[in-house]
Image (cartoon, rainbow, N blue to C red; front, side, top):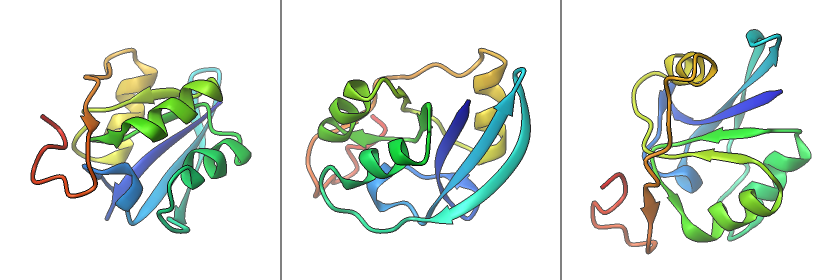
Length: 118
């Protein structure tokens, strides 16, 4: 299993598409066995969900995310967790312990105006 956390300086970012990087956690037997950070290759509608799918990601964790990205992740059978905050490592650990649940936080427009995370 692979978990990706949209991050900014090792903290969960509040908007998936504009994150600085993705922390990718390789998980075996419910334990993190490897971690790597990859830079965000760019924000274009529909690109990042397909990019992360190609990397083999099974779960994406972010503070907020647009509905279009969520739809693509759902089509790819990638679990979407929104509403997360704090350190990326803690979010991945909480997910593995079953303590991190999605709040369903959806960004409805690219201007945002502080609507992400509400």
